Image (cartoon, rainbow, N blue to C red; front, side, top):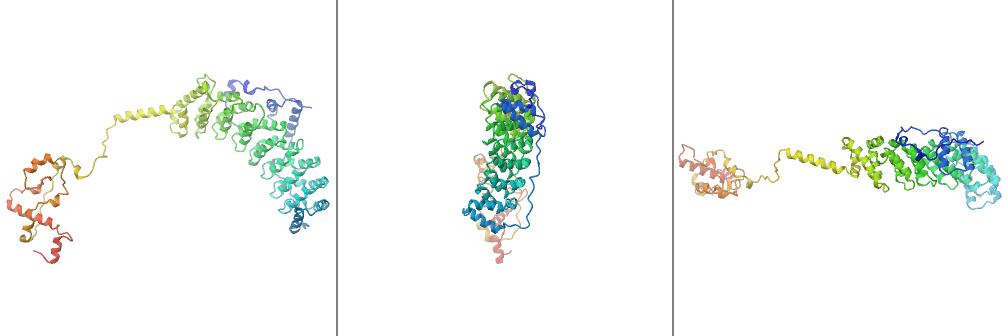
Length: 562
């Protein structure tokens, strides 16, 4: 008796009230079980176009088997018993493979060899050399009866062969070559109980994909396992990709594809945050050809936008729905949940939560929404207004976040903030004490101001009493001015004309260098004594103050001493 599903409204995306759309829910850790969503599953299936009685009967069949499905989640099947004495060792296996490759064995010899190897077949199938012989025998044997016998011999260990690095090649060959109903039934029966661990295995998932070509009902166990343990399979690296390969296969029926698509929709908010599960949501939006896929997905995402839009990976799923040009109703549903309906002057709380994301994923998401080409006219103006309103309220907290730069520029707030900062800087500068620039100040003697000469007072100079022979040095230095000593210390100033009258009144000194104190006679001293002291000073200056290498030091070394 076909179970009658409860009637639920089909237009979920259009019949939901605005208050229910704006309500945000906390995202649970795991999606609900198949038993909890069974009634809702029929509604989504009908929205995807599966409405005939035959199709609904198949859906009920799949659902019932999925609810009663029991699988070994961690066990990949038993291992064959090891043989104490192997008849077919490595040298003999090489000879057999050589004969099979060279087509030197007749069909009768191949069948006879296959029957002789039945006892060792389970162990040889996982051997690095024996698996190649098993593949050749199963492929070249034309007798379906012999193939069936070989399959039944390895059937209890077929799942364990599928996850073995050597045995997986023999298992895939057996599945690919099998063509009779008995062979398909034997393979499906041996793999059904271990479908879940095979999905998540790097080798076993290919064995399941080879079974897709059997068609329904011999490949139904694959989709029943997906429905029963969808969350466990979709979280795995190999499981999610294997499910996607099953959905993209031509051997999958529309009912099988629709069932898995509905399971993806009902777990979309959880899959979007998982690196592997997001591949299935991407398949549903980009590759799936079922109608109204955006319409049935948007209501599943709307109550969880606060968690999804602040997630780096999940926000891409929301953007796919917003950017779609096929179903504008699904886009408007998410935009109303994010920014409120047009004409609403109050931003929804979810927008505050998104823009307050510390990782800046929320700000990046809002910027991408504003960059959507399909967002035009009054709708775009409404979105910009709502974002600007929230950013102005949160401006005190957003000033230190670098990730908001592009968003601020997009809504026109960046220039305003910069102008305010510039005005504050100008007002501060007008009240500050002006700073004197020292860029053009130089320490060169030619830049010394005039006041420097007036305030400069050289300390008095008292020469040491030296007993040089006056007759030897006086005629040579008596009338010379101290030009060589003081010319470099006090160069000719630029304002020499101002000091010219002062120098002309003192002709005994060189023009261009200020008179110093030591040149003035001390009070109470005769003029002739001062002249003699000055001559001695000039003599010592000319001799280099008796420095090493000077004439005075050389004379002392030669014995001139007074």
